[in-house]
Image 1 (cartoon, rainbow, N blue to C red):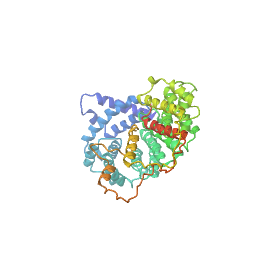
Image 2: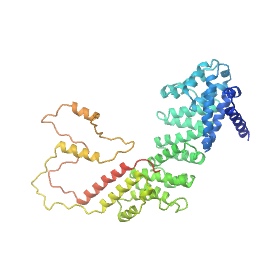
Image 3: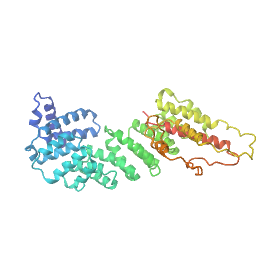
Image 4: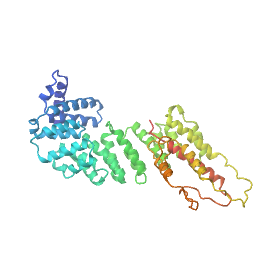
Length: 459
């Protein structure tokens, strides 16, 4: 009740200040710490799912920036105002405003000035300098509003170099500021760090807490990205029952979309069991039949069985999918899946009637090998975010590998020919490759094409 009354009073002042004809009214009426506290209350409402409060956040940031630009040494004699300046900076404030305001603050202790220096480095993109300054400062010894933000910033900065310490700091941020945007951000970042460490228990716990408290945050899409990636990365350590427990706390539509995304990513990585499970959950829905007929679920579930013994059933299912309800990328994926299914059931090419044993295979010229490899690479569509192991050189910009080749001396006549590790061994005898094996190898290569075509998450 007390918090609600404070919020109501501050909002009333803000609305009055925002609509008052005098530009200096808000500055004369509210101190920096009052404005920043109001910003935090609005951000907490946003984190809880009140998207209608976002315009007020923008207005508050504008008002705080104006107020801090005009603040003088007298304003910063009150420690609450200087702490508010630091919180504003760590809330995504204007680094120019923060730096200018710090330069005008005269009666500030050494620790607060160190925090200010670290915050400025953080804001202008100097993370190494920021963590060097902030590392000795313990957030738990600071007032809770400032300590929570500092723990969040330090945890974010140390996520790569010291993930264990980063998780400890994010736990401190949650402890110091429960139910706030700080906790929302700390949980979201904890999920990503847990995935990078392979910590399935921590991943599941942080994901559960996030879904329970912040599923409707405007930043929940970032959590969803991390969650789907984590399920794929940690699939050997997270049971389907645990996954179902977490998603059961979502509303039915979000649950369906999450399962569709997991099914698609699992298909990319060849995780047939996970892809089939996620596709089935997306297709069944919360009550067992809600999403029957969703073309995306049908398509992704088909991918996990496209080379199985029930291929005729898969072909029939693919043929019934409504193409008009798929995105352009998924329509291309459907075409590729149908082509693969056709290849699986096509009769293998027959072997030549006779193969002279005395006729050894002539070695293929290197130029033809290179041309074949280039043609194979050219046949694969690009993948968003993928890095080619053999980058092709453009006419205007040769690749590093091409440059190295053109500058290397020609091989001597007696030098040995070195083939890449992936090149097939050359045999002097007859080709005894089984036609069925050859057909399956071709099918697998085409499945790789499907993997390449699986791009962005379903819409």
